[in-house]
Structure formats: C-alpha cells, structure tokens
Image (cartoon, rainbow, N blue to C red):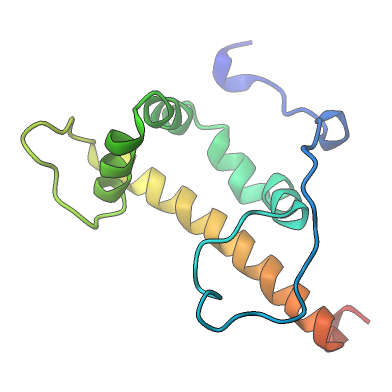
Length: 134
C-alpha cells in the first residue's frame, strides 16, 4: 500500500480539540465580517465533507500544505496571497505550479463553503427557521 492509498481513519477515532461553542446572541455589525475562531460544528463539517476528504487524499495537496506550514509567518502570508491570486510572485518568492494554484484554490473554496454553510445553518436554527430539516 503506497502513501497515497492510506485508509481514511474513522472520525470516531480522532481526538477532537476542546472548543467552546458559546455563541453571542448579539453580533456586533462592525466585527461580524472579521475572521472568527472556528467552532466544533465547523471542524465537524470539514471532517465529514466527502469533497474535502478527497482533496486531502491528494499527495500533491498534502505536500503543498506541508510546504506552507514550514514557512515563517510572513512568508506563509505572502505564499497564501500568491496562491489565491491576490498578488503576483516577487523575485524572491518560490513560484507555484499552476496545478498547485488550482488545487489550493479548490481546497480553500471547499473549506470556505463548509464554514459558510455551517454558519448559515446555525443562524437559521437560532432564528427558528430550520424548516427544511423538519
């Protein structure tokens, strides 16, 4: 069995980090679009996403994520900006192959989708509008 063919572990075997799920009933309109900490439902949505699990099974993406993780904070930020197309690589930046950019863009899109859907579902539940689940 090669590295690419490692079986996926059952979610019940994972050790989930403790994350307080205290939601504020009042959301400050000035900070509502600021980055927020991920909560347990976000992690669960990402862990159970078939598309995200499929992407993470790709050794190229795992190598790219490890490469990003090995960078210091400033270089990581620069690399992320390049990968999402916000900036062009400078002369000192290591170039990314087009396939890496596409793969990372898809990964980021799926993660954002999972977080966004979880937030929308939680918002509907807080308002008592979760009719489609009934």
